[in-house]
Length: 225
Image 1: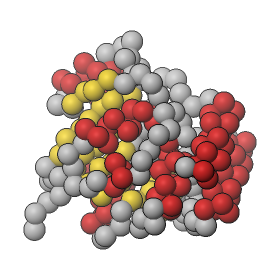
Image 2 (image 1 turned 120 degrees about the horizontal axis):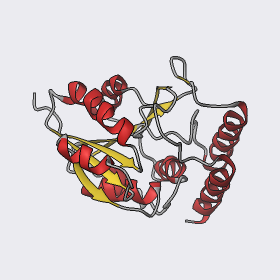
Image 3 (image 1 turned 180 degrees about the vertical axis):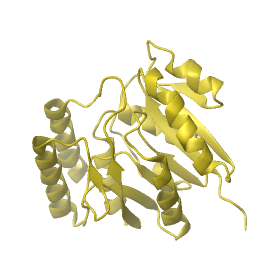
Image 4 (image 1 turned 135 degrees about the vertical axis):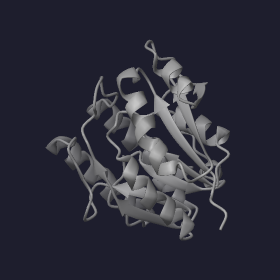
């Protein structure tokens, strides 16, 4: 059986303390597959890009925001299966096997969920948990979906699917936009349990209230799009 070509797409900004451990964690999981690791770097002021390149990753640059970085990463990816993940070591490389299996089983998109049995988070204070729940409920109500999680970046896509979603969100609303557009385009989406660990080193980029407002705007904007 021919193994699918994997593209791992990772946005980065000043992640030099994490990037080596992340790529070292990914490599044993994907070693049996033809693959590429694509880093979309927001012009980091540290050695993130140099370290990633020295470890065999392809590096492209985008400093607009997380959404823009992912969109450009999806465009550059050659894979039969594309996996997006964060660079802060909060996502467990082992879970890639489930994300790959979901696409191989015939789903268009496989989405990690921290709220399914077997999932969880070490990095979600009560107010963020509440906010996520509000966004999930709102999207499910407006778009008729049945999501359990919304703002989580660990997910996989069948070939061509990410580019068919018509994504426009440049910032932290990107995951929400993906969920909404997948539902609007009647794509087959599978949620799988995922456990989010604490960021290993460095500063988190999420600003709860500011980015919460962006996510809310994304939900409303896509009603008319």
